[in-house]
Image (cartoon, rainbow, N blue to C red; front, top):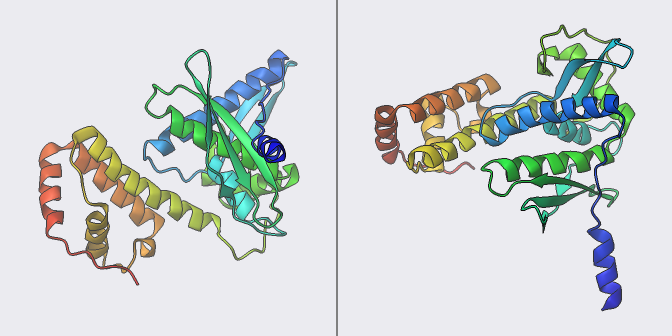
Length: 280
């Protein structure tokens, strides 16, 4: 019994995030956290996020400006799934919660590499009274854990790949030009690609918007009927047959409907008669 308890304690060990004490590194760390928070808040609110990397200028203690480049959660996920060697899909473990004396909570989550069996942990503190804080904390904790799985050279190669081939995916926290870097081949893997990741995000955002409509207006739209409605409208067999641009248009249409009570009532009545056809 004692051995089992010790093993469990070892597996669920929390990893504390430490920001360097010196002012310069601390300011960079805060800027990065703000950049991440900006993206994560939009994502958990159901807005479409197709950015995989971010970049912004930062002056060092000598006044010299340099670029801070990093990956968003979706960037880390895509990087992990498109590793040049031993491609793998992250397995997210059930989060654990530890209350603090100040009323806040530490959320800790493990991420497992199913091929190597390696498990890394990430944690984030959140305010349980804040509407989106927990979901943002969960996404952040997953990102911190993924960060420990992915080597620095691989992350750098991924960012350079995006800047060279898909610079529109690099989010500028401040207005500054993105200079294309000489490309490095990220992967020859045929597993999930950045385009597929974009579509996953867009689909997630569409149905998050349906949830937002219920939260804000109390109108409960049947997600399966909503999905069938837009499939019928576009002539698609599956929502995944729609392009990312078309999925953005679906999201925008739902967002617009949710802002107009009359349009929402009309839409709700219209989808009542929709017959759901299960995808094969």
